Image 1 (tube, rainbow, N blue to C red):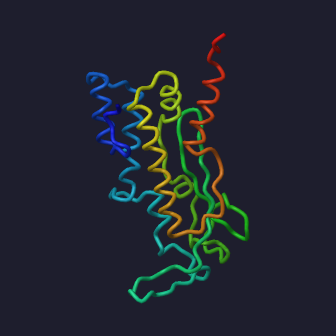
Image 2 (image 1 turned 45 degrees about the vertical axis):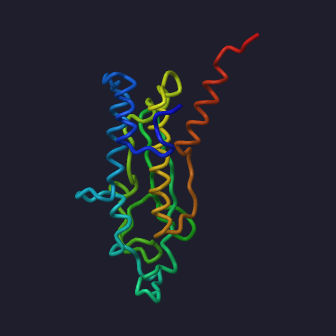
Image 3 (image 1 turned 90 degrees about the vertical axis):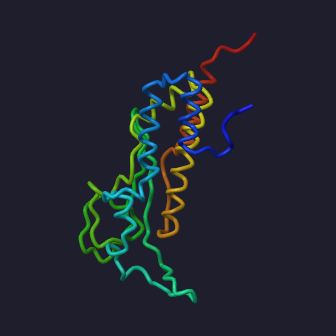
Length: 202
């Protein structure tokens, strides 16, 4: 029987990992847990993250959006700014990238006062990568090779947190498409390759 709940917090997963390893937590786990804790507080950190910049309505092109006030005096965005998201997984990191949609196409270049752009200013170097999970790819591979329950729980937790942040974006933006392997899809691919490499019983 698992000693973790169905939806454990990061603190609970870390405590369970320490219990399983008698306090000798591998560096690969520690790196993954630390970077996940960073995105856990992405909306509460004092510094100006790319995620926060995206949600800053002062930088939205109001000519492309319309606001409506509900009976509860709450402003609701009727025509939401259009964006495209991209799950970017390389040999080391997982990143979530964002692109503004202009005339049906996603833009990768700097935009300033473009009447067709959903943002007054779009700077790819500071706004395109919404967040990064450093050293997360090696941790996923490690988990499928010799991971324990805490390792698998941490991977699931990271996937859930990313999904929650994307859902948060959906409240403010029209997400035209989401491309690339999600963490869950990447894990399925790793599992498939890992399973096919195992010797079969004869």
